[in-house]
Amino acid sequence: MTEKKTYSVLIIDKFHFEPEHDMTIRGFPTVKLAIKYARCIVRSSIEYCRKDGLTREEIKQAWYMYGENASVLGHAYRGSDELEFFLDNPVKEKLNCKKIREEAGAE
Image (tube, rainbow, N blue to C red):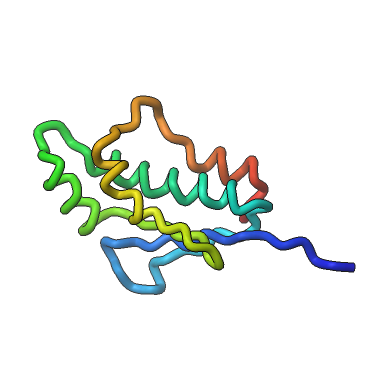
């Protein structure tokens, strides 16, 4: 019997920037769901840094210092590659990364 391939998302804590603070979420059944989750993590992190009165550059600097990046392991997707888009396009609705993870059945 062949084992079904799943995907994992590595979440990098930029504040601590030490491997023991990073987290790997395993068990996404498709790369599409893994990317959706990774995008959500990075966008949520940017939105957390987006405070009233901060310039775009200040939000970006805050994300580099305190945010979270996410990559799909074994795939080319890295959330930081979309940083400029995320900065220029604030999210209007509340993001729910936990729901994506639960619906995917990931650990």
